[in-house]
Amino acid sequence: MSWWREFRQFISRGSVIDLAVGMVIGSAFTNIVNTLVKGVIMPPIGWILKGIDFNDLYINLSGRSYPSLSAAQAAGVPVIAYGQFLNAVIDFLIVAAVMFLIIKPVNRLRARHKEPDVPKTKACPYCCSEIPVAATRCPQCTSVLDSAVADG
Image (cartoon, rainbow, N blue to C red; front, side):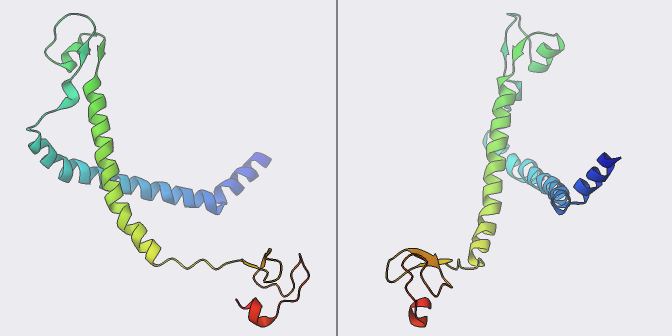
C-alpha cells in the first residue's frame, strides 16, 4: 500500500492545496468576467451592430439550400460554420480586453507596494570584480575592504 501513502503525501502538499484553491477562485472569477462580458459589454455592442449575429454564417458544402445553419446541421449536411468561429474570436478579444482592464490597475498597485531590490553583490574598488555585499575581503585580489568602502 505504498501508493496510498505516496498519494496522501501528494495531496497534502501545500502546492496541491494552493492549486486547488486557485482553481476554485479562478472558476469564480471566470464566472464574474463572463457575466460582465455577456450581460454588460455585449448588449451595447449588439445594439451598435444592429443585432448582427455571426452564429448563423456558414458555407454549405452540399450544394442544396437551407434557411439556417441549424436546419443544415439537422439535415446532416456538411457545413463550415465560420460564423461560430468569428463569434468565438470576438468573445475572446472582448474577454481579453476586460481582463486587461481589470489586471492593469492591480499590477499598478503591486508595483507601487513592491519592496525595492537590494543588491546582493558590489564591485571590488581595487580589482572591479563582483563580490558579495557583506564581503570584507575580495576573493579575487585579496584586498581588505575597509568599512567605508564596504558600506557602499
